[in-house]
Length: 200
Image (cartoon, rainbow, N blue to C red; front, side, top):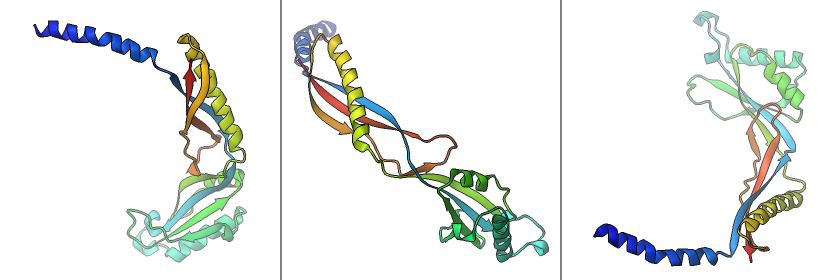
């Protein structure tokens, strides 16, 4: 009895479901375009702490000695002391006295060279990042993404045996990326938007 009632209810709903589909007057599609990021700068952090320098207690260098050695090696390899800015940021899990420096450069070659240098006693490099400039041509990128969305909407409308009409709305699904972890050779991002078109 229950099954029979369920069949009757579903049968009664079918005309309404068909009507809802027939009255569907829009299609919603995503448009996207890849673009190249413009690099602003590269950044790395360096910690200097006796915790990173394993030796017998009587042979341990002072923090000042470790700092001095680090900058001597940097200068021998072409890096100036002014390129390193002292930071007050603590390193989690390190209880001993420590120093943190931030290295910044606009040159990827210098950034790679710095990271390829062997760590001096008591030092560790971490948190490599790349920072991007604001987009120079956001209007062009948006227009390309919108054109991509329209191409997809035309295909869908054709499959529905309808004609594509005017655009109803656009929502920007893009979050500007100002910085992210550095990976060599990766310098692209994707702009995405969601567009709704009328169909006739």
